[in-house]
Structure formats: structure tokens, C-alpha cells
Figure 1 (cartoon, rainbow, N blue to C red):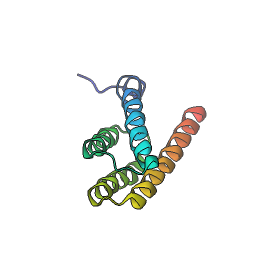
Figure 2: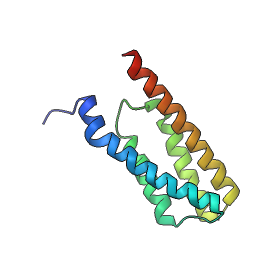
Figure 3: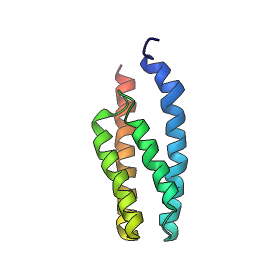
Figure 4: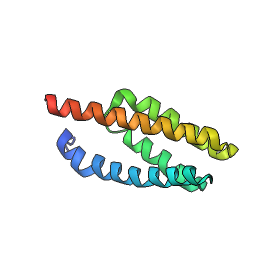
Length: 111
């Protein structure tokens, strides 16, 4: 079976994953805003989604190591119940996400 081209990969795999990640991240942010630590399974779900995301080449590869690091930091914050660091890490992830999306948008407009 030949590898998927980038457009097919985006449509069939990456976009649905991105939508799921947005929902999971929303739950994490809501917990942080409410001052409550989310359940460990929600953090693990996000980490699993990040791991899948970084397996797809060509969608912001340069940012992938930072996403992995930040998602793991979320887990450490959740384990330690460190709300201040948890919120800071959520802000870091939001910044990474915004930068990556802007860069991808720019790349698709150029090409």
C-alpha cells in the first residue's frame, strides 16, 4: 500500500486528530481556569494525541519536540497538583499551537 500523500493525510488523519485535540485541550483549560486539576485520564488522553500528532510529518515538525516536552510537563504538574505550573504549561501549549498554526497557514498560502 503506497504512503498517503500530504493532502489525504491531512484530510483523513490530521484534521480529525486536531479537532479531538482541541476538545481535549479545551477541557484542560477549563479545569485550569476553574482552579481544579483535571483527571489524570484527560491529561493522558492529550499526551496520547500529541504523540500521534508528532508521528505525522509535514505539519509543523519543528515544533513537535516542544509539544512533546510541554505535554509531558502537564502530566508532571497534574501528578504534583501544581496548579500554577499547570496553567503556565497550558499557556505555553497555546502559544506553541498558535505559532504552529500561523506557520502552517503561511506555508499553504505561499505554496
